Length: 321
Image (tube, rainbow, N blue to C red; front, top):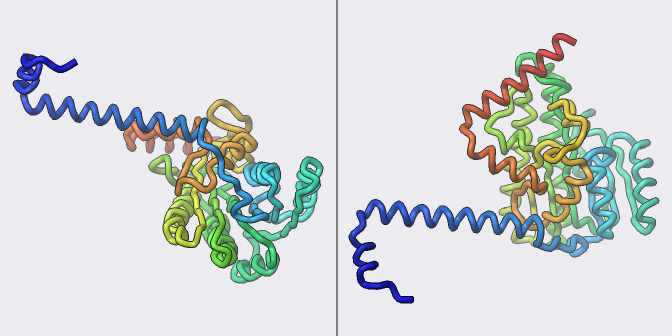
């Protein structure tokens, strides 16, 4: 139907500010609708990549518990052989047996290494020697530590905060360097660094300051490497989970059971495995991405006050225990 001349006349007689405001509102609505449709597509419809195209082996650090162990199961389910890295050799053997009981054809190699003890100077060379001859196509950089409880920075023992930096920053960097060399030679690979909402989603994370800062480092490292190594066929991704029901999160937030917005490690890893090879940064679990969206609408000052109040309550419990 063609608009009548009177309709066109009425439209052109509207104040310019009203026309601009209407156009702006339309474009904002269109952008939000497109974003929502894209979110639904990614969560429900977009097919996961075939991880075996990156290589036949996958390495997982921090592999004997929580998210790392859940990732190992998911990767085995996808048909990849595993290199499991953790500090406890006994638990490594136990987890290996568990996985092979469910996936008998999976080859598993274990590397017992404590990221918090001694110098990490020879780590890259050690890992390169251990994986020599293996087609390692996927790296899940999951190892990470935090404070034992909420504390102001001046209350944190030097050994505690330096250990957090050593494991989360130096350990992640050295493992990534070791694996990237082989990926560059083969011109393919996927690196997934597990970050945290503490370093990205919320504007601050008081009383766990050094931990949050190290996770912000992991995110920036990943973002830059994503651009740096794309030319070599290597997909680098920062995954930013919020609370997942793990032992590490129980220290930070006193959370020990899963809920709608706090997935089990298995539920998180199942969602996370579908996102590998796509965005430079993502929040794989659907409820976490919804929380991030809602949080972005709240003024930073309110989020800061909320985070500080939570930290102070946890610190008070520690002092009254």
